[in-house]
Image (cartoon, rainbow, N blue to C red):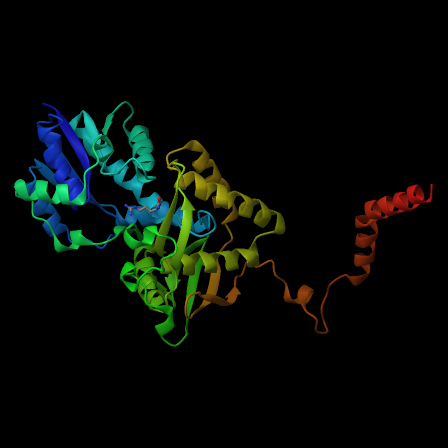
Length: 400
Ligand code: ARG
């Protein structure tokens, strides 16, 4: 028996795919795997649609907590922002989904794994690198790369096979979301001159109508957020709550042109209220605690980590090596940040840690400070030695 295991979203594309796998690719058995990474989805109709499309089994795998504790946690520690802006939302869920699919495929001794990505995006790269890492040698099928279907043709196909089509599937955008945020692309956003309409947003409010500013306290332990206003929460819940708190201010709305792995630029609108609030706070706490050399080394590696993960190399030893370095730097990153929620951008109002290297008695301009002023003269004499030699040489050669 030929079995294929599909990374199933419950949407129109992957529902049609179940039919194509049987009719056009000759699979006897198709198992559709839904992975819960905290997306805003109703799984009940997705099950029904998968069944109606002819799936032999529709499996729901809940990976919310693991996703938060692994991919999201490492992203927060790395302060990862692809091209300085995008906290990797979709790039993070792909390895999780692919891993769940590969595990089930291995268990069933399936011939193929299947994803619903097109040939123009990053997600195909991420899925396939992860499939190959978790099920070496498996055959990968990408029906939307083999055959480009129009939306209308898909809807006609679904109707002809009795697959229920949702009204939501008329969305003018292509959406991907999980507990860490939401990506919205295509439709009128494809013209970069068009401002995103409010309809492009779902997790955030318009900053023009932001509520009155408010302050929250985020507690961190070894680099990870562990509490909100003193209440300890597992990471996935903390993120959901913070999305609710920061979203109404329009915090985490990102509208950018990004460089995809496949060589084209795309216009993307993201909503990442918790991600931006946490990365801003975490950086502030690091500023208080890390040595200058640690901070310089870490800030140099952060964008490299972001690019690596964006490009699909989650399951790569070099990512683990970066993470080992980052983990070492986080051992003392424990403390609290006061974060002011206000329209568009959160602001750090204060920070404290028992491990702060910041020393008030050294930094203060007030009396009683302990800075060794006289030693500064010696430091400057030595630091300036070379500059002085160069200047003297210039004067000498100018005189010749
Ligand atoms: N461009 C973003 C990324 O590569 C978002 C992709 C979202 N996928 C989607 N089907 N809308 O991470």
